[in-house]
Image (cartoon, rainbow, N blue to C red; front, side, top):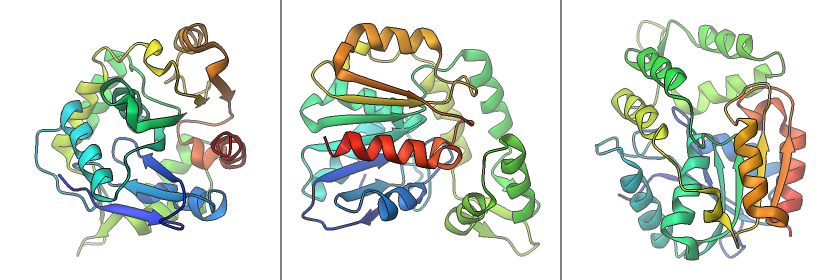
Amino acid sequence: MLLHVHQWGDPSAPPVVCLHGVTGHGERFRRLAEERWTSAHVIAPDLRGHGRSDWEPPWTIPTHLADLVETTGALGVERADWVGHSWGGRLVLELAAAHPERVRRAVLLDPAIQPLPGPSLHLAETELDGGTYPSAEEYVQQRLASSKLTQRDDVERDVEQHFDLLPDGSVRRRSCQPAVVSIYGELVAPPPPPQTLRGIPTLLVYAPDFGLVREEQVTAYRDALGDGLEVLAVPGMHMVMWDAFDETATAADAFLRG
């Protein structure tokens, strides 16, 4: 499937492909692209079941990888730097395992390497009838309550980019809920081993206070990759592009500039 793609920068510049998390969308990378990665061609697709891309099943990892290969290939991108947040980070790991020739460098932003089954089940159950909020302000307040470092401007921008206003004043996120539930199930399956990234310079940015990336995972990646891995722990919660924008942007920019 050809995915809907958001792009910033000169198409002749080095490509950086950015992958969002579950329930997210490609435009979450706009600020990074416009303020920090101005010398790159930033490509951020809406993954299958999200945003303005088609929502048909299957929503398996191999299908998502096939979508990414087809979409970047149609843009003339055979090899790129890949940035993945959460579910997008797991997809970068899977892509490096299946198509290592396509991954020049990897930036993992609080990646969902392998979430624990219990929390994944809870999130999947929550999303069974999720995606709709009584008002835009209700969504904003829920997001702000989840982290003291999240800024209102970031959440309001998310509403503008990723929600539809319904006739009764409620808002609906542009995500296919069956796809969301399915992805939470995919994530608990065993990931590629850390050794998959040997030979691929990697930056891991994670939020210890959120706990998605566990310390034993960080240790395993350090042991496997040695000097090929840079690690940065940042304050705040899962949305590191919001809660720790400066720290995340500065580290990623320096890393991608080599």
